[in-house]
Length: 173
Image 1 (cartoon, helix red, strand yellow):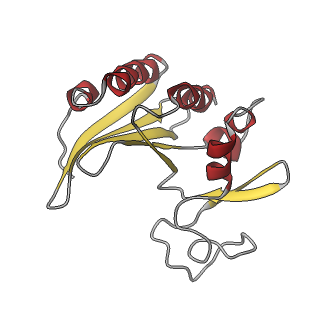
Image 2 (cartoon, rainbow, N blue to C red; image 1 turned 45 degrees about the vertical axis):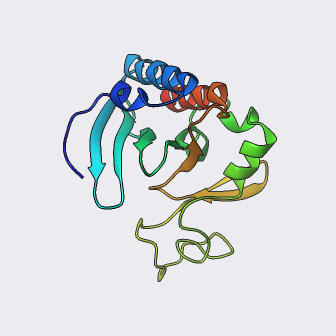
């Protein structure tokens, strides 16, 4: 990964107007709310992407990763505010059914690699990211990979309002 400082608006300029506008707004929102952004260009034989990692200066936890380029345009969301709850409320209470189901089915390395079917840590697993984080919501267990988070495509059909709320919960944590 090349250590080149890039601006998200450079990469967003090739996106549809709705996506471009949201990327600019959310970048400003996170920076204005005490997030640090580390930007880089990922370039190899398979892809050329702008990668933007947003981290809370207060908690030191990743808020999200935005990727724009030849490998796809997506945001990888974290769930720190509901996996490690501190305050009241979380985005799970507000998610539309399709997004909620996606979050609750788990993501990342998968059962059998990081975790066993009973959600215990698989000590001999093949996960390269250590192990997944297990969380429970209203009696239902799920998990996420520490590295991958939940990936949502960025296009005209994206629920930008819900992603913005999710980011706000992560920042407020």
